[in-house]
Image 1: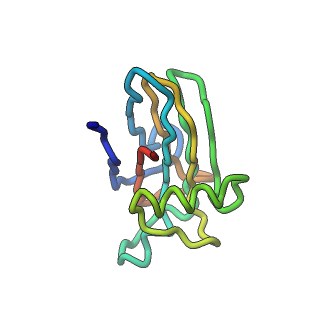
Image 2: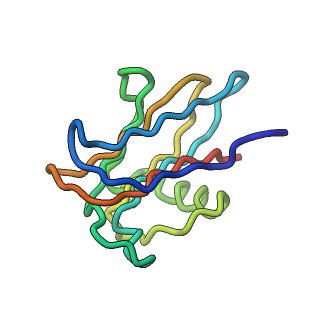
Length: 133
């Protein structure tokens, strides 16, 4: 059983045209559960400076937004996000952090995760995509 467990990219993000865009695809066959994280403040304990203070995460299928998050711990599925992160081997996010995350079921197809800074803010963010079993 071959699969991609996760990929990530650390990048400078801003707003609008300066947002970070990460493309990924769910292969044919069946719907997959995917954990997508936009980590800014959660990078500070690792010595990363200049992080985006409040990253906004949106997922698109083509030009259609399929999900959005601004503050993972306020998500109705915060416990599921924590559990999926631990199962995937991701470093934990502080419950009070302004990082964003989605635990989402995606049908086969191409998707884009967009990460931007709230209110025009800029900084470093880590964008992560994990396949959850």
